Image (cartoon, rainbow, N blue to C red; front, side, top):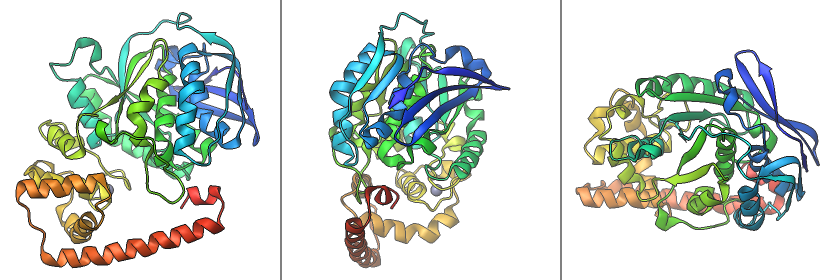
Length: 402
Ligand SMILES: [Zn+2]
């Protein structure tokens, strides 16, 4: 794969930063766009964001990367020696490759404004990071100054038009919160998902790091909310038919995605999901802006994330504060099925945390839920056997979309 130097393209109210690259699939363009007010912060001096964004594709293609320009020396060292290895151990369809930049950058070719950024989705992890980095005891240089809202897969990875609609809808739902707190909210669109065509849960760390690395003239620190607690950190195989997540290795990956002027910091590592929910439930803006849904713009109150959050808030005796943003009646139609799935799948860390909370708070499951849980367990076993059977007959590309 050959990656050319980034270019800025004027697109009316927005500005695009893009690069042309050549790979097995032909000559293509990877682009990101932001409001033109942020044009001065886009890093055109080097290709870091594009190298990270295209890394998975190059590894899948088994193509070394040749960069027709500069990249960060630190990033180059860490990707080549460690991060590529970590990714190849996490996703079986990825190959170990090498990166060959024409020139290395030592961070002195541009000025960084020393801003502190984080992604803002309105979710539990996102607000947990905010609670820990905006309150009074946060050192000044660690306080969040900017929020980033990127269209790089979290709104859907395989249907670009649908993802873009959800991206716009969610942005509109959330945009008043940064305004109320006096922070900038940067909306960043991209065609990265179309280029990668890979499952988001397997690849989100790289996608989000890529979008943050675009603005190295703005951010000196960028917080990325970890999906798991630090003692759950591991490098594990997450593809094939497993329901694994690359997030288990976030605490390891963070140091490999830094540059001379940019720190990618994995946050909330000291708290499990229940502790994070407890923390944010004392933060008033969450009563209006908490958005946990994996399905819709507003909280659907039926998807696994909505259900998990509602039930946790109920156990913590905090749900009343959130009654305007979740629909309790709708949740109650799914509650039994959700609780049975929690009882039946103790492999899930999140379920184990909820079960512990039920013990701590004295909550008793009705007996019939244990019977329902047993049926669910049998059904899941059958479904997994079927998935593994299919795996032997389909290729990796098809399997990734299962
Ligand atoms: Zn939902």
